[in-house]
Image (cartoon, rainbow, N blue to C red; front, top):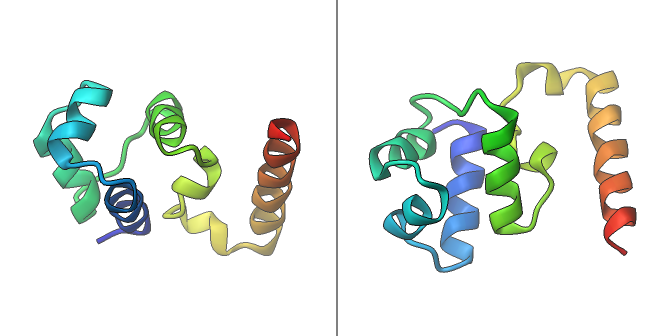
Length: 91
């Protein structure tokens, strides 16, 4: 599984949403969601990540953790700042 897949599955299960339910909410097939969760591929569209993030009420940046560049300290810092800004906007 990819980190994205792990995150997606965990969020889905924590929120009591089935794969079928998430399929209905997003319009993506169950197969696509299974493939994301198994790490076969990840959504390439930021819109898709944004949609999933809104469903689970998380930052799209925290959901998309399988970006290789995230290991770069500069990228980690940018992600942390974006998450902090987003959190402050919600408050």
